Length: 235
Image (tube, rainbow, N blue to C red):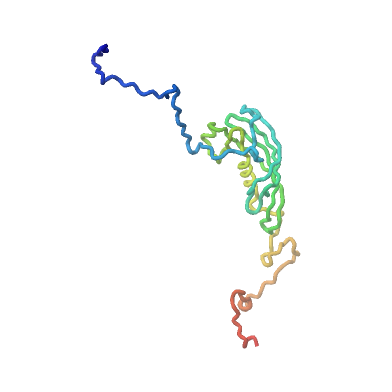
């Protein structure tokens, strides 16, 4: 039996049904999620590291706080050229973890031992430094995480945060540019290189007569330069 003809519409002009996006099983084809390159996790934190803190107890409830005090071993390279914290030395941390809307705010102090050289006399310097810590660690996918630079704000990985970068910045910025064994250190003698504080007050070197400077230069012979003396001159 023929189908009734529809006026103005030919069989070839009928609208074609679009192929279904569903699979034969009735499930939709999964969409491919493309993660931007700058949002892909580069590494995962190791909870066994001494400066990686677990904030799970805060429950991401804004206003909840937890004090923590613990010793940790200093990482490598915590310092500058003349002074720093020895690798593996004990650091005393007195912190407060506070849950806020955008992440976890860490504040408190770190007490670190210092070892280095005096910038004037090169004597060994040993001291202790107390630095203040305050750093916001943003939750993943929070507005702060999406908008703030990594240099400005720390990042959470799940419930874990890494305190090492914040500690490193605080310690390095608090270190003196020229560490001193004492504030009135006199330094080294420019002539003999001895420590002036260990020498008598009247320590001095006689200035050579400038008239003999040329002869002195002739007498001081470069070890790498062969001798020009002859057997006749030695007799």
